[in-house]
Length: 248
Image (cartoon, rainbow, N blue to C red):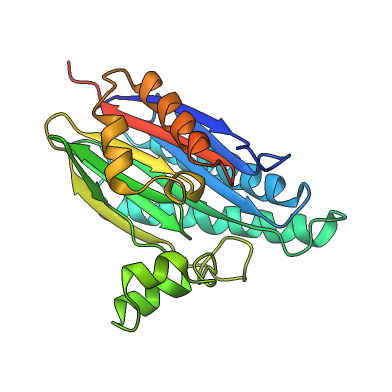
């Protein structure tokens, strides 16, 4: 099943460099979003390496499949592409001046047959918007999320914790990286939102849902989300991808 994508990125109101990156491949119904970190231009390098490597590797594999790929094969291909992106980032950090210690989050989305496959590392997110309801599909790989999952911190405490941006997983952080990958059935009128924390730090789920509910066109909704995040302060770079199946 083909997919329709819309994307938008913005540096925000307080950053000079946009370290978020997005790439899509309509032919393969594939989208990749990354939020780089490392200061100066290093985060920009890490996120660009991630989206380009994953789109190329995973897109090549998807094109090689005669039919809609099975879950096991697609999960393995997604893991390989993310692992390769991690290797590329680590090597670039080793040899490029000013790039030591850089890293990035990543979210990968593939529409394959009657399911969405979502993989992620870090705190960039994927949501499902369907029937007027916003459902989060990913769980942040952060220190505060681990504490909440263990019952040691409330969501209210997490929202103001000085550790809320401390990642427990990221590309470029170590030689081994473990993405979390889940399959979700395609539902009628699905829209999938992928975003960096520049959106979710500025807008809560209720506000994001209100924007999505106000725009039928994906392009309009993407730009409205960026504008709303900037209107709320725009403290970080913002990246947004919206996807929906195209039914014949």
